[in-house]
Figure (spheres, rainbow, N blue to C red):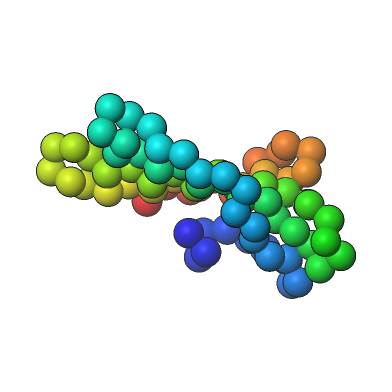
Length: 77
């Protein structure tokens, strides 16, 4: 995931939540806050990691938003 997102120098990620979804908990959703070097939250990231029940194929999706809610990065792999 780190290669897909755009962080400015000095910004760090802080895990703010995680949950599982689906009948067999095959989808993990992680929420992160983007923290500036001043300690201010300047954006958010939601990373979804899904493992298919049939064939065990794994897919991932990440959405990075700024503090106003505008999408900065959206990627699937």
